[in-house]
Length: 234
Image (tube, rainbow, N blue to C red; front, side, top):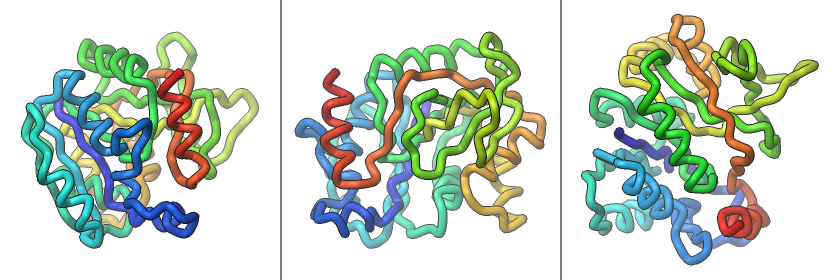
């Protein structure tokens, strides 16, 4: 299994709220967020880790390049207009086969993530598996519609909730590299935003399954740091 991290944002909200470190280096219980992710990936049978870093975040680049992990790290340094464009840049270095993509500020408990990865590795029927959660705390959540709570086949991604809506995207995406063809089409068609790429996958006939995790949170504000630390310590 290969892994990829989007860490190309500027972290402007944290900086405005008095957090001096770049977001990927913000510590949760003494460990930088980006390193926490990488260590979890190592323990989840990582074959490689690819990461994209904002050109202006030289401190993050130096930190990542100084790491001595047990797996190869592919580093892309580029400022992009959206997370989907960051993903596209990463697609050039992610090896073929199954991989899992996440943003650097997506916080989950390691046992939940490990079960999710194991489920995807064992799945031979779907082209991708999306981590979803019934815990809604995102400012602009992406709602995930499934056929039923047993099969959990994804039928649509929606910006607005509806009567009976249960899940939102957790920002963790496991898929096969054949999804890159759809990603290339999105870029060529001037489509932006990760949520529109996800819709394009459904439209292209990719079979996606949702995997529910009780709670996944993001670190967007300074106040989220303490919340995240308590969450992963529970």
